[in-house]
Length: 144
Image (cartoon, rainbow, N blue to C red; front, top):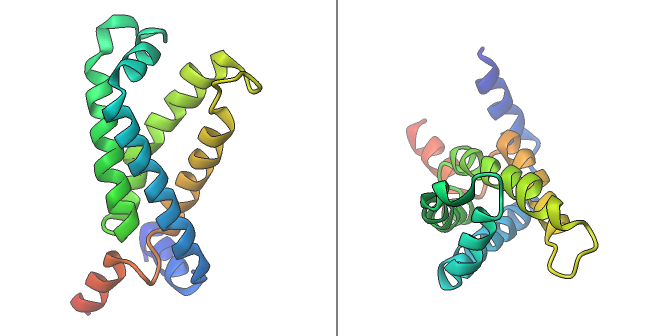
């Protein structure tokens, strides 16, 4: 049995129902952040250009917006949950290290604490998966 199969089996047998609420809440937060970035793209561009990447990576803003929107929706419904989470982790690591950490924990506009909580939840759901109430589980049962 491969390690991915063992992690998936453990996840299915040890997934309390309240974690579904947590997964959906995480997806909603990411989706709302995507909408926020979409409606206020100037703030996102300023955050990216203020980082070490500078102006050369303005295409990154477009990518972040759509990964948050699509990934957040996929996490909400539990479809390809681990893939959606894995695509979000580099974005949140970048937000923690390059954007929020430079502002400081107690700055007026700092979202460092929220970014750290979301990053921790993303890492958790990378291992945990979508759980029993997800499209991942539905399609897995359909195959069997």
